[in-house]
Image (cartoon, rainbow, N blue to C red; front, side):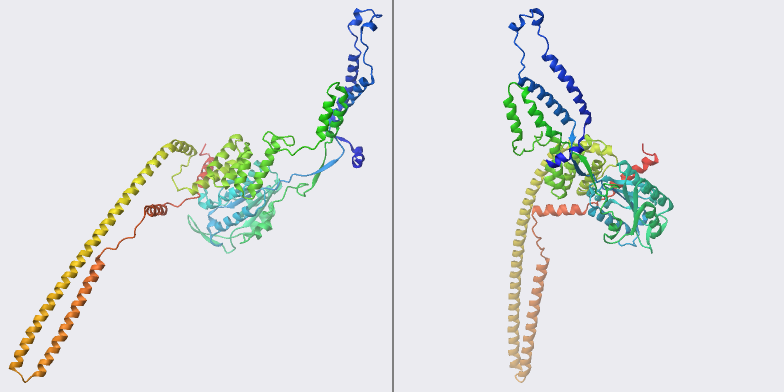
Length: 628
């Protein structure tokens, strides 16, 4: 209280025009007094000496006078409260707007040079991806240039959506080849101005700069935009393909340094790490110039008029002849501690509905930054404004629910047509959705795409019916396949039985042949023995010759048996080799999986730059006047 009274000398009224109401209080008091003294109608109809006996005397009690004066005092205090008296100042931090960044990438044919392995283009993509990943806050836009400059992604705070376009960046998406850095700087300035930024940064990734680009950088600096450069390539240069043959692109560091000096920024050659980005100061965007950039605070008067309201109510009590006790109890209830209020959609005693919606939005933003996308969707889902639906679309896109995200972007655009961030994010989500689907023939005109969407909606029911029919057909096919497999198994069993019977017959035939051969051998032996006996009888003097002849015959029989045994083994091997090998059994699920894998292998690879190429071609034709 002592500090409050010490500051009474610095009394300040935030709405001083309400003090004019004090001038009306004397007029109101005079009118009130005149109404109290107004002559009664009986004074004109009754004689004066009879009036004291007929009229009730006016109330001249002190209570009546106290009520009048307390009412005037309550009115004066109410006027002072409406004027917004303040005796103290409170410090509030100034709103700090982080400087936006426009990235301008050179997509001329020189970016295909391989002096920076694997190529300049690959290194530039990786550098931009690192910048988008490590940058802390601030809006980012992406511009590409060759013979002219084009917008790939407008200024947005969602750097992840800008990163979706990096895979599609290549020289073949540009309508015309060339190197116009001055147009890239001019187009970047146009993006910053259209977004309402008086200050910002432009980062140029290229290998050289001409006089026109340096002059344009100086003009950008004069407006308030800082231009920095990152050099692509090496001083030795690299070879790349052009229509006339081969070209050689070298890094001209001196021209890039002059451009950076003219633009008030810095120059650094492209490095593998983040040293170049940190040296240029693009990872930590700074606020604008002045007090906001220095983080200063502003002192503002506090409205203390609400402290007079209890006094207004207190001095108003004598005006109520009846119900004064009720009003006193009401005032006492206001001073009692209130239970904590629960948030409701329509607001409560402590927060309005818009304040509660803002709190939910902040909670959703915090959950989104923590990558808790389901919680963010729950918080954003109750906000039906354009910004709320835009935030909901971003959270749904991060959660992989692309169709719902596109619908949320459509609702945001319906509430705020021309919302560039919503348009850009919708295109990015649509591209991400189409990448995950099998490649199909896409129309180049938006009207045909809308017609296709309508046809798809009409064909959904037909597709469902077809799917049911296909499922039934698949079930029938599976049953047929099972029956065929059973038949094949039965056939294989029959073939095996036949083969076994054939083998048994062959074995029987072989046994019969062996028996016949043995019988023939026995007969031959008997004949030989008989012949030997005859020879012995006729020539008894040569026993040694007969003994040698027997040994030779026995050796020949043994050789014949071994040859027959080898021949039988060879026949058995030929029979086993000639039998078809049984293929491994394949289930219907394995067959379907094999067919699906073969279909995926036969698909045409996706072209991520097709949509971007079409977009830039249409923009080029519009600028040339070919497309109205």
